[in-house]
Image (tube, rainbow, N blue to C red; front, top):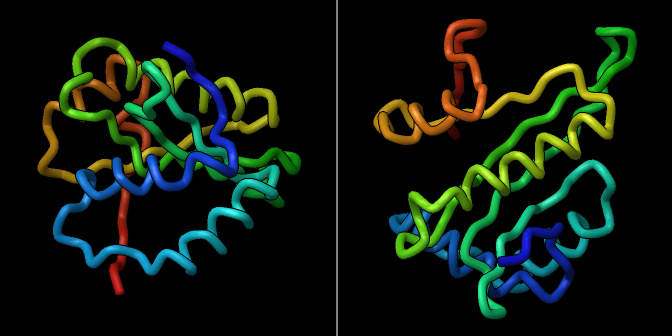
Length: 145
């Protein structure tokens, strides 16, 4: 298995994984997806991590590095859209892609990384705790539009 940052040619496979992440979502317009993807690939502050087995992307997450005027100007990271193909779960692959994203955050001098998870996904919460994420230091809030 290979873990690396995504490349421009990885879009279709990542979109396929995202279909299983949010199956009730209306699919993204392909031209919009390509525009977003090109911008993301060319941006140093957004990275997609992929796990590849036999030429197929089986897991991904993304990390956004947010510039910051507090903490002596140190940025922070946000990890989102963590997904591993169902056939490959519970094999440590999700941990590897998140650890790769965390390593990148450290290289970018982030002082923290935030990860949100659906309040219903109790198994995922245990998984994130096992990696080292603290559920007691902050309380997450969101507004959806």
